[in-house]
Image (cartoon, rainbow, N blue to C red; front, side):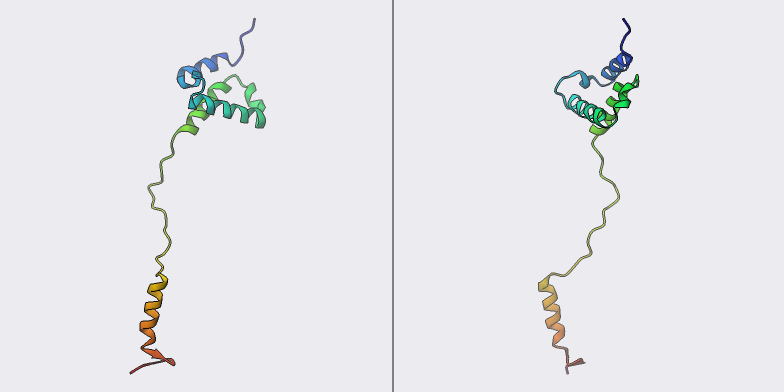
Length: 103
């Protein structure tokens, strides 16, 4: 009997990522999700001898938390509140009527 071509890659994937063999683990569930996506979108990829190891690597990468960028994100420019705008307008309205300064 001829061994399955991906058997060695399956063993290597489980050895490198032990949580893959734990049914119901986060890693196992994510692996199965990616497997289903591969079946639907790129079934030819499953013909390769190393597909279990490749898919396990993709699973591991997808589960790594992403670090926020150290570059500060731009914030909106400061805008005065309506109360501040009204107070400013009232204060300056005393000085200018009809386009000229009030004495």
